[in-house]
View 1 (cartoon, rainbow, N blue to C red):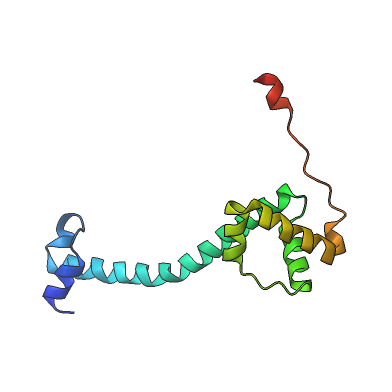
View 2 (cartoon, rainbow, N blue to C red):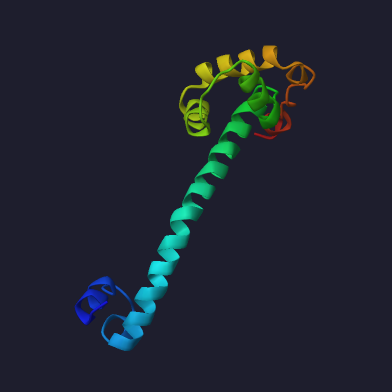
Length: 125
């Protein structure tokens, strides 16, 4: 990279990393390495976030994530985790319908009891 490109990429860096070519070149190279690595990590992080959201949504209805997904696979419902996550957050009734379909498809879903209600907090308030 020539000097002009390095300083263009180093814009916004702190200290001499923005105006001293030797330090700027090192910092820009490291920044490009971080951006390459984190483009892959972002996909990983988003998938785990979607799984957490789906798990939270299914546990409200008394089913855990693994059994829910297994029931959807058995029923050949091909919704990806991103869509299921959005449904669990913004469309609770549609998501409940999916949980019910999954529960009927996989017998392991029927044995799990509903989560206990926490009524002790309402007494204190």
